[in-house]
Image (tube, rainbow over all chains, first blue to last red; front, side):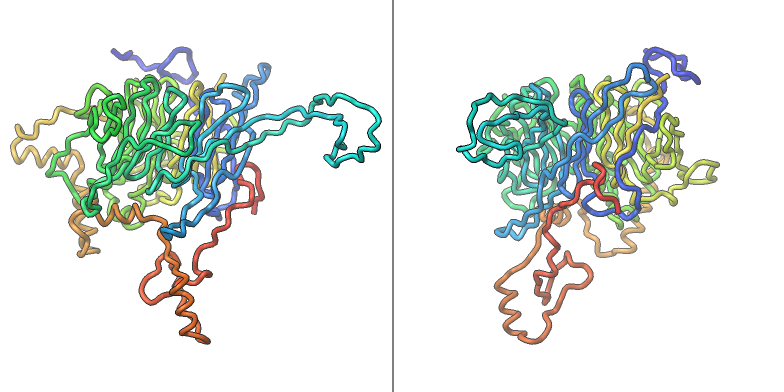
Length: 457
Length: 121
């Protein structure tokens, strides 16, 4: 079924299935090691065309980068990403009634497909979702009758003629304004938002509930999943992520802290507490340990672009599920299996609760996820080859091909390998994104954003 | 390395074979780690994914400041200093009366993000 010969060669040949050579392109953010809390990047997302790249941080700020138009003559690389717009999306709040501090940290950003000249995105913190409009202004009216150019009103007695104001070009200004604020619908902390393929509705999920919204309506939302038990003492699992199917507007999935994924069909009933499908890999009960449930907790779920598959990320692995098969995943990729013998210390330093995300490339042939020591991993589903790369300022020259990294689990450490005990667990890559069409990836370290591209000859 | 799922037929394996399979699949390291943890914290509950752990997750962000308590305590103490929080300001328990100074600052970031070329220290 798959070609037996390897297409890997020194030169980047034509055709699919080649091993991609990843090169450093850009890095954004401060160089200093002393990271301010607010600068911690909490989400990264390309828009539908890939022209825009948005980041959210713990300080509640959103920064949007725009890819510059390709210079056809200088085709060494694809366009660079430069700052397009930045704004304060969310502010810290205090719920006095519940004595609850509400963080301004942006948990997720999701772009709407472009319908007109403006761009729209949804950003959310723990409690409130906001719809932002980002629009360009490149001309302004001049020649008012009653106002001076600086805005002051003229003395009406000095007005002797009548003129029609005209639009004149001005320096490009990008403005972000909040168009809708969707608040007060979540008792628990929002972990996911997902826009429906109808482009009119979207879902928001917290630990125990999922709500359905209409993008135009802010004072109402429908609850579609509620797993809160009548007696909180009986609570055994929480919702960890949720996403709408990319093509079927009636279908969505949500993952749990127990490693299960439920697929729901909104046509079946108004409240989708009963799943249509339950995806769960059977576990040998004799293999169970104290850590089993914690490491099986799913931190991210993403549908493939085709809608045929979905990918889940748990602490140690990435799994690909065929929507037609509930009893086990069709592919499993080990991200950092060597950590299995470090679970005790990872539990003590809380790293075992880190929530890694995962993403698909545009053609669904490669998946990517982050790890520790600023390493990130890619798995080619066709060739079954995987690679470990590092996001580091040491590989800083544009068009330098990144050298693959290797972690030595035990035994004799080879040259260029790094031992498990030398890994920096404070340097974690939780958020990565892949351009929808090209081989351009955005990788977020704690406070820096790296952009890598494949080598273009 | 990626793995294809193998057909699981544990019932058909003998006890011995099963143990070999387990060792090959690396289950032993996890059990060893569990033993280490239990040795350090013998009082650790049986159900790690149970209620307590999840409840802590749901209660993230809970801060307690009762202005009534604070003013009463201030009135009682008069000239004396109010007991203040230890280094861990997020945990408020027992006799400690939270003071406005103990609560973390609720100001938003007015500085532009460094990703956008904001002020670099």
